[in-house]
Length: 300
Image: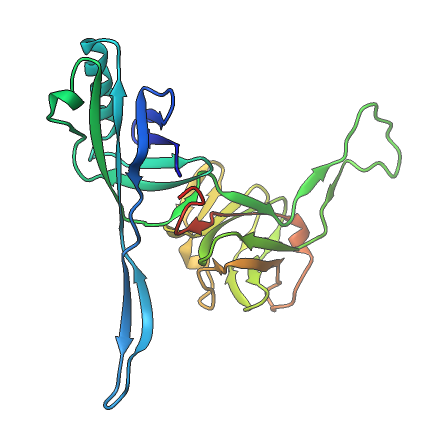
């Protein structure tokens, strides 16, 4: 059972906490309905066939409702809390409902509804109802999980004595890592490449399927490339503080990489202009971000 949540207005950064114990906005058992995911299976059948083939599945929206009580010591306090709730749950603003480490993005379907009965709406308490629409119907973590493939590590320590073998920094040699998608469905990734020198045609590869995201370009020191296959798909380049669209540099054989449920092995490689793998990968720092998605919360 869910006994607490946080509603965040992403436009204003204002938030409201609700729980079943001591919050200004009290939840009660059965007051939260997380709904279900609308699902449509596309099917096909031929003449005289018994049954049908499922050719694809589409996930639709989710509807959520939250009902609870505003508690106060005076009519003015009740009015003030009603006003706070109404301003936060604004149908024009994007909201995020957080349940511990997971949450879901949504918008209010209507303004907040308050009870019309005096027994449920007076100078000491007021019952409210919030109806929400979630166009992306899955729960995901409140912050992305990150993995680093290639990273420069500082090795400078005090006290310091200069010798002909003094190591000031080193580059982690591994260009292969395992990324575990904890959710039950494939999800996109956001890949951030940062050059620490010249980098030739960097390529991210899903080892099991050999799918790849390859850039046909030479990166220079301080340049950052970001590739996203999450809800928004894009390729951008940032240098000297200026960010621009760089989709044209993505090789035509590339795919928008998706992490399958479970373990995914990812490699980073670089190639010279003749297509031969080279060592310029050592000048590259790679960070991968993803967010697992769930149909149901464990608290349900």
